[in-house]
Each structure stands twice: as C-alpha cells, then as structure tokens.
Length: 112
DNA sequence: GGCGTGACTATGG
DNA sequence: ACCATAGCCACGC
Image (cartoon, rainbow, N blue to C red; front, side, top):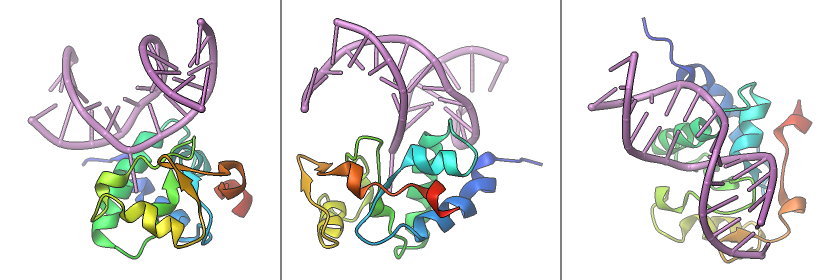
C-alpha cells in the first residue's frame, strides 16, 4: 500500500488555512512547521493547489511565501484575483508583495 | 532507483 | 533592497 505524506497532512493543512483570520496571512513554511513537517513548505503549496480545486471557499489567497510575496497567482482564476481578494480584506500590496508583512503575518503556532 | 520539478527558505554579497 | 545560490525532499515519471 502506498503511504504518501501528502495524504496524511492534507486535512491538517486544510484545517489551518480555514482559520487564517480575515485580513491576515501566513506562509507555506509556517504552516509546514505547525503541522510537524518543517521541511515541507513546498509540499504545502502543492497540496494547496489541489485543495483549491475541490473547495473554492478556502482562503488560499492568505498563504504567501516567507517574504510576503504572492507566489501563487497562476493558480487562481485570473492573474489578479489573489491580489484583489487580499486587498478586499484591507491588505495593502505593492509590487506583488504584502506591505507591513510583519504585522499581517499570522502564525499558526499561536493558535495551538 | 535515478532524475527533474516545485504556490519554499535561509543566507551571503 | 535585490539577486544568486544552495539546501530542501516528496512526488511522479
């Protein structure tokens, strides 16, 4: 039988992304660390791209890279959708990057 | 079992 | 602040 890591952590990722507060955002690495797989930030993004296809309600736009840069734009319906969704929550974006990232950043660990 | 890939990250210049 | 580089490792050929 195959025992893929991606299968075992999919639900954890889903659950965490679901509770990212409106107007805040977190990173792939932060999520990976919070679920006990600190070296799998890449996998988090990959799984997120799968999840968004099944549930367009999940706030996947609130996940960016460790610098606050929107690196997932290609996975949304339109090129500017991710940015539009974030700006609609009051998040300011300049040159593809979240302004005041330190303040906007939400750490999943603080929710445990 | 090797190899390329990726919604990544840390570090150094 | 920007860019390059190396490290990372599951996953799908």
